[in-house]
Image (cartoon, rainbow, N blue to C red; front, side, top):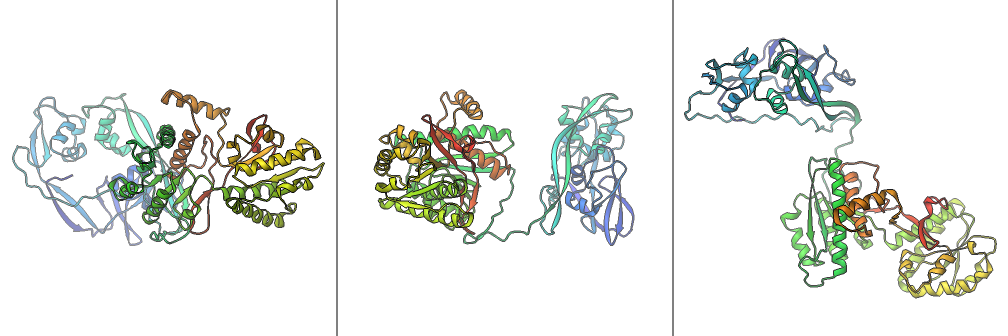
Length: 603
């Protein structure tokens, strides 16, 4: 606030004296000066830091653990004096004649001051003013140009910021609350404001009062900050961000965040337009909107920007250089490899977290700890399949079926290396390898025979199914189990009866169970909002936005998602974070069910 001020500095030379704020004495203890504040009913640490301009952490530290249980009425506490010099404000004043109907609040606005300041200049006016009364006001009471002397603005330290200099510090957690105070005899608005350390202006505004006059028995609503003091261990201050560094990154908590969603909406059609892709992006958008409704109720304050990538790398390059991206905290997307590479490089350079809602090339994940890959690639899922079988099928006969397609050989080798490594450690059965034509020789009657066929090729899958069917008489139907990949569910030529007969299983990162109560409830809300039903892409948008807001920004650990189980693990010291959780699905009665929730297996 800019006012007519004349500031005079003088050195405090006495050991004990009375000075503002409040009417607290100053004492020198151990060579340091402290205000000695006697706690009154209604006082809070939040109010003290506002009144004395001293950070809450400094107040708690000065009192050596005596405040851990909270403030107690009558308790004397030490409040550090910020400087050895105290600034005393000498205010130029003039006389002002009160007009009919005027209030202290109205006069304070008129002279750009506060009700508290008027009360200090005019003791007794807190009991009310009357027409014709002469009071002191800061500045000149006549309408003429005023000489303005600018002074440096003094700001109250932010009570939520803790300097990380020690191994142990205090954390003060606030919750807003409202106290209803019944006015006692002889109480004034001013005395109530001092008792609860809430300004007169704030009390008047909160209670919709136009006058400071109050009556005994009147109820005044007082906004307070309930506080809880916790002792926490402070980590070392992290070094400045190095794009080529490794290890954990620390992100500042903010009052308001910026989230950018990059998706191929094709709003203006254009080159490469795909109605299918555009619809998928639109469904993803609708899912994020549903999640944002929930996040706002949870208290997330965020600006969310949706940018059409058009699947055009030159357009994305211009977007990354624009003001649209400035200050982004998290980027969700994009959907295609070429633009994913561009955005990943941008995020790495600018310390922006990137949440990828679809598959992403594995090489993009290397040496970039800002990326969260929600959809594991095929190699990762086949490795999880090996881990699952080595852990949960220690009595089974496990046969790895050889593949001939070059693109499948990496999956084959990944499963083999992962399984054999784990089997040697925990006593899992030895892995057997067989060609498709020779599988009949590996079937053991009376044992559970698990065939792992690591292929995404439809013809290879069909050939294996037909071959196994010819040898099925060698064992009971429940003794033959197939583990393939999620792509098999899209092979319409692979007979669904075969998948049923041979207990077809696969691991996947998503599972949308429309019979789940939470999914049904969310679907009902979605119908009301968008007049259509949930799709998998809607659920993906919902889950990713909900996880982004609750876990990454609000830092909540328990999150109920629609079709994901996000559990991210960093791949190496400088690699991306990859979702390591999965569902083990099996076809039963021509429906997909989660084996881990039916008692047939556990993760």
